[in-house]
Image: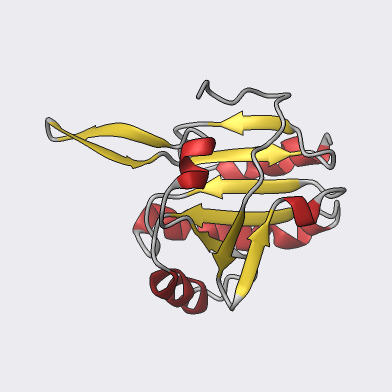
Amino acid sequence: MSALAEGDTAPDFTLPASRDRTASLSSLRGKPVVVYFYPKADTSGCTKEACAFQEALPALGKSGLTIIGISRDKMKAIDAFADKYALDFPLASDENGTVSEAYGTWIEKSMYGRSYMGLDRATFLIDAEGRIARIWRKVKVTGHVKQVTAAAAEL
């Protein structure tokens, strides 16, 4: 599959999510959505990113924007993470990797000279018509939510 680009239709998904919810992109048609992929629940970078999105919910919610976080963790780990940090937005489990593959976030990584497959920290801002308005890949957590908030205000 070729890489997604801004202007493309966002791949639809329906995944189990925190607090016994289901995260479904098609059910949110008509509203802007932020879909962000994070490598692993309850790690330092992922915690910082999730808490930053949680803090930004009032500002993002004014525009009707919904946030969905996606990792390949099992639901037990995701639920514990959401509960530990009182995360109100859905965190979804893409345990089999089909959504990560569709969004091009399942990539080859390297650490200490060892290559392995892992989830790329990436964010997709999707407009009300279901088109990708902005893509951030290889996200650096610090300041990222401010970038997303500014871009969402332009929708």
